[in-house]
Amino acid sequence: MKEKKEEGEKRVLEHIQALLSSGSIKAGNKLPSERQLSESFGVTRGYVRKALQRLEYYGLVKTLPQKGSVVERIGGKAMSGIIQAIIEIDGSEDIDSLMETRGILERHSARLAAERATDEGLASVMDAHAAFKAAADAGADTLEEDHLFHLAIARACGNSVTLSLVSIITPKIIAMNRDFAENDPGRASRTYGEHQAIVDAIVAKNADAAEAAMRSHMEKSKSRRLIK
Image (cartoon, rainbow, N blue to C red; front, top):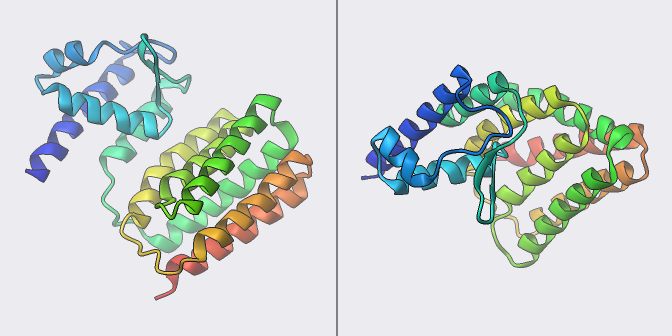
């Protein structure tokens, strides 16, 4: 049953990817309704809804009250590449290579965010930071909030290519960590402290400190992930 569900979601994602690649749907456009997509793709509305939720999670679409789902303003080719990464999630990536590449992108986005973030961008970073703390304080899984925090920094950096690359790699990072056991109850607290150092540097517009804080966070994150 699980395989059928995943296959249905995959079909919807592939259809939406094709619409983006062909230019039938462009950045900023409203997607057809769940019913229309269901009929067009030949799948149930449940599959459509789940696929749209995944796209919203990765920051590719935004659901607006009484307006439906709108495609975020990311270039069609980049959007298609991100969807392909989501489709191909299997957790089989080379962990060292993936984390090395992520570290480069994250340090770059933190530096640029410190230099360029608007008030709106800073507010989004702060909101994501607060959401991580709320989840940690509640004893909940913080994987989603953690990556939304990093995506908020990438959006605040003012470089659409950096945002696209971070967005592409995020599904792979999540897949890599999906079954990672958080056995240490103090881990989320330490991660929050590392995030705080990054936020403080970005708010202070100190690019060197932001990059250094992100470098430290990535190194500690890798160390935690690879502890056996």
